Image (cartoon, rainbow, N blue to C red; front, side, top):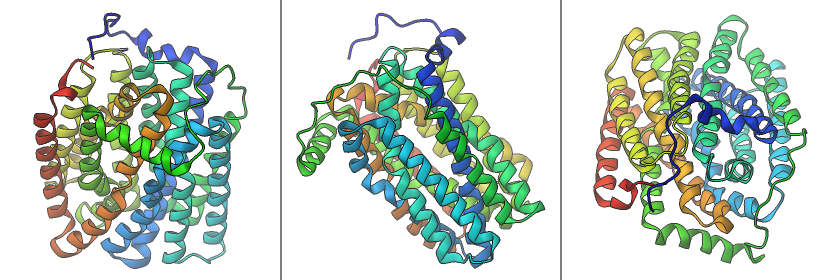
Length: 413
């Protein structure tokens, strides 16, 4: 791909350009509220899973159940290409709200046990499966290619930034009033997320004749595009590496670090999650100011390699002050991975098949649950610190090899 002749200098104005569109503002604000509830609920349920079992493997099993529906991401991608994206998004968010209220009510009346936590985590993840391909393709429908990098960075800033206040609040509520109140708190975030989607988001133009009505052939076409484009294939391989080796640590084992390694309890857990989110938020905002820059593949690769190295350092630390600094820096590094991952996939895929290609990306992310179970066994056997160090180093080495074998991704995309 040729270097963009319209590349603009780094400015704050270019970074916030998508927010001038009312439709993007509604979608972006809804995402901010939704992910606040999602991360708060994840913290509470993960804490409950560990408190009910005192087992790293049990926490990993819960997190695997929560993220396993990502394996049906290609179905969500087909939905994104076939049906009204906005209606799909509204439906998924309202279902998530209802599930959040139900689990909070069960906790309040003392009907919660470990297997119910796992079940609710799975159902909540199931409503998530179509959301990511739909959300990203709807976003590109609104802003177009010119502002895609900035819009994607702002969208990821909403997702990562939501990990600052909401999880810290959840940890504080657990410590002060108990997990049942924390579940009510997490569910409350989903209401404004749904209400904001009721505002008019109209005037969106997209191709509607891109699918042939046959589920299997649509699935095959999405995979075919991903396999035959070497740059897309490299993005998918790096995504699999990160979701097998790195993100399971952040998703499943932070409660264990907080309780057993750092000895900081639930409030410390909330602080760790929040500082990771703050680092990612700052990274996303910096990327958003870059506008439509070249070198997106290089940023993706370097961010992922740095993320792995910082994760390995985090596994070695046993002091809270150092842990906060390292996990903050890991958040900044992960922003390069998170923003450029979906940006590259959308830019490199044909317009008529973006939803399906994003669905394949969700399937790559869906490898995480299997890795969670394996890492749960490793953590029980060798300890969570050793597992974290080993996985971080392996991630950096893996992505270095992918970068070496994928010159297409190092070009000026």
